[in-house]
Structures are given as C-alpha cells and as structure tokens.
Image (cartoon, rainbow over all chains, first blue to last red; front, side, top):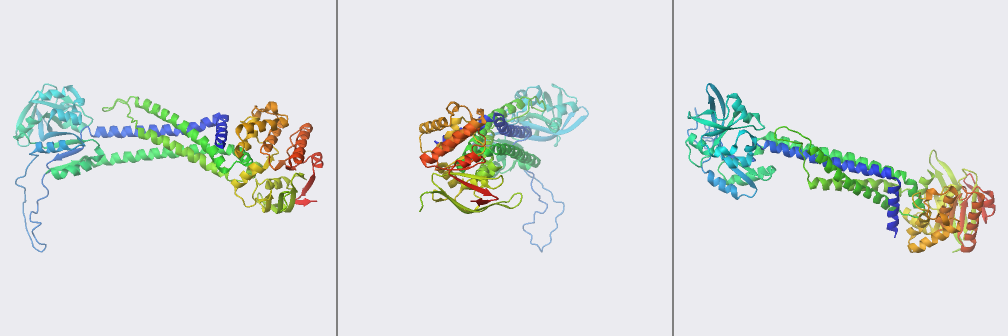
Length: 414
Length: 226
C-alpha cells in the first residue's frame, strides 16, 4: 500500500518536471554512450595495432640460437686461485638451423591453443641485378602455412601468391627491393649466399606490406628451393613460426613447450620488447580514459540528482510533517534516480552503439585499414549499464538521505 | 495519571543560533486539556509560531520536555516522531504546502495511506467526505495547483483531518482565507472540539477567531502572559 504511494509521488515528481527529468536522463545517457564509444574505439585501435604488428611477426618463434659465449671453456673446472690463459678461442663447429623440424611440428600440432605453425628457411643473401647489389633476406617458406599465419597473399600488388607453388625457380619480392633494383614481374633476380652459391630466380610476384624495412629487403621462395641452395636435407629449417589463440598468452605457451623443444622458443614479448610496452601503455591509457569518463559522468549525474532533491526539499518537509519516515523519503528519491538510471542507461547503450557504428564507418584508408576500427564487446555495454545504475543510485541516495534526516521545520522556516 | 491532559510542556526553552544566539522561548510550561480549543496569540517575533512547531514535534532542537497524550516525545528519533505525527497530529501550515502534481483528493489521502489502517476505498470515501465538509467536493479531482488560494488552504485542512488526529495544530490556518471561509473553518474546528473531543491549537492574528476560542495563551518576547 505505502509502497505504491511512494512510487506514485516519485512518478509525479518525474513527470511534473519533464525538462529536468530529461536533462538528468540525458546526462546518464551521455556518460554511458561516451563510455561505450571510447572503450569500443580504444579497443578497436588496440586490436588493429596488434594485428598490424603481427602481420610480420609471429607470436612465438622457434630457432637455433648461435651458441652462448664459449671464450672461457675452462670456467667451470678451474679453481679461483689457478691462472689460465686461453688465446684466440673460436668455435670450430656448431649445428645451424633445426634438423628435426617434423618432430617439432608434430608436437606443436598436439597443443590446443596453437592455431598455426609454419616452417621457414631464412638465408642472408646478396640480391643482384647487373651491377646493383642489395643485402637482403631470402625466405624459403611453406606457401600455404605462411599465408595462414601472415596473410601474405593480401599484400600482393602484382602476381599471385599461390603461383609460388608451381614455380620451383619462382620468387616473390618486396616492392622496395623491386624499385631499388629496377625489377619488374618476369625479370630475373640473381641471389648469392654467404657461402658463395649463386642462383637465378624468376620474379612471379611483388608484395607490399606495412613495414618498409621488409619491402626493401625481403624475397620469398619455396622452402625446398632454399634447402637446395644450402645443400641441406628435407627436414632442415631455420625458423618455426607459431601463432596461438591469444597473443597475450605467448609467454605461458612458450614456457610450456620450451622443455620439449631442444631449441630456443621465443615469445614476441622477448623479441619485440617495444611492442609489449606500447601494447601495455595503450591498455593503461584505455583504462585511464574510461575511468575519467566514468568519474566526470558520475559527478554530472550526482549534480543533477542533488538539484532535483534540493528543489523538492520543501515537499520532503511536508511529507515528513505529515508523518512520512526517512526511509519513505529515501525510497521516493531512489525510485526516481533508479528510473532515470534505467531509462538513461538503455538509451545510452543504444546511442553508444549508434555513435560507435557511425565512427566505424568513417573512411580511414591507411595501411590495410579501410575505416576507423571499433569493437562491440558485450562486456563494455553491460559494464556501462551497471555503472550508470550504481552512479544514479548513489547520486540519488546521498542527497535524499541528507534531506530525510533534518527537522522538517528547518526546511519549512527556510 | 490525569487522562484529560492532551498536551503538556515543561520548562520549554529554545535558542536560535543564527545569525546570533538569541533566546526565543523562555522557560514555558503549560497543559492543554483534551477537547480544548486553544489560541496562541502574540506580536510578530514573540515566538508563537516557533513554539507551535516545537509542540508539533517537527522541531526537536529545544530544552525542556514535551508530552502528548501522555507519551513523552522529547528524545524520540525522527522516524518515531514522524509515525507519531502521522497518527496523532494534524497540522495546517500558514501556506497550504500541497503537492502541486496531485489532485486535491490524492493530497488529502496521503497521510492516511501512510498510516495504512484503512483500505484505499475507505480512505477515498473519508477524504471525499472531508472535502465536501469544507465545500470542495467539486474540486476533488482537480490538481492542487489549479485551485484558488482559499481552496488550497481548505484542502490542506481536509488533509490535516484525514487521520482523525487527537490534536490539530494550525499556524494561522485562516490567514489566507476571507471572512466567510474563516467562519467555515472556525466552525469546523469548534465542532471537532465539541463533538469528537479533538484538541485544537492554533496560532492566529485574527482577534475574533481567538476571542471565540476556549482559551487564549499570549506570548510576549518568548514568555507567557497570563
């Protein structure tokens, strides 16, 4: 009975001052939609930056590191007070590359969170065309898996990526390299390895990534051709590149497989420390921005609710004079603020989605991007709504409690 | 002990602290009998309204003690006082203080709905009766801010009566009414005191109104003049 009376008063307050109710609702709506939009945008930017970074970088790289420092082989056996003298120390022989790649690939395939793995034979070479000589990287790759990991086919400006499957003497080179050496498709490219082996390749494609350093120095050939160039057997690789489901888990996954692989297992965070730093900084920035929005919007809502209560303070006094208890007063104003919170929240979610959707369609043609990036995570939307409810609850409760605790006469007397 | 005492104040003293400390009420003690029609008179600033608010339990910042219907009200919490007022005291302000968004009928029903002793239908019936008693039957469904000043004041009186309070207090309840309406209100108060034994305490500037009541208490500079 009394509950419905309180609700009736709350409803009368809300509807009698439509403009003010509207302003209060809009402040909730604005706060929530801005929160949703900023989070979606920041997350979108974060994701796209990671995607761009990982277009040329695998999450985990497995390779044979050159042996550690061996300049003092007797270090462990010599006692501190003994004197030794080693001159001209050099490593006479060590194993290059990975010899048993098939075994490692088998092992990786059994891991659940690994989404893809590809083998590479990377050789430092001189590219030559007539008198022009360019130092670069010749990458022997598995055509399909390479494309699966790095989407190399999307970077082709000339020729087709899959053609590499059909031409043992074919090569696909970076656009920078092609310009530097005045090469076009169907021209020949001469390659000289560090060991002095020279071979000529036919250019069947040209690619352009987002990284100029790669475009200027890299050429792809089939992995078997690369093995022949080095006179190595069919299971020889220099690198195994691995992608996993969540790139943030790279360290964990690397640590887990490392004991079973007799080579160096390096997560991207180790090889590219600056990427990890920027990624974390972006996350911190995103949190800072959304917290700021929450606080600013929260104070806005609080302010409006405070005003509403102050405007109604005389009515509060009258209700108290007639015998309404403090909790009735609090209930009346809480009902109002929660109603404002729910309506403002729902409209805010819709508006936030519309703004995000609109911004997501703003053209932005740089690198592989077509439009501005955006994410639509349910988590952001529900957090924003919950936040709106909590803020309006607090913003309605604090002034109402204050008003409900004073002598009615102090208000009436003015 | 004495069941005929409706209200009793002892050694009531009150200060205002703003803008400077000032003693408004000085050691006031008196009793009011049940069914008595009492007028509080005095010049502006004599403290009569202030005293009435203390008597109504809406002002708790005082020294001394207040008893209504043999219940000690001094020292009770805000919520206890609110519940007590709801059931036992009807108050009519100088200004009507109706909830402007509600109809006259809804305004009158509010205290009874809070009390919650009767069904909504009964309350509505009682409220309509009170309104017609004050000549407002036609205005029952109009929203309060569409009524004239006199009508609003009468709605406020109807609201004060809805819970059949044992004490009705008014702070110049007829201050905004013309002589015809003043007479109506006066007659109603008189009737309530006579027939239902309800105690009436009003602050008034109207000498006729005061002269016709059972007893007059005059305040001067915060002290009782007998």
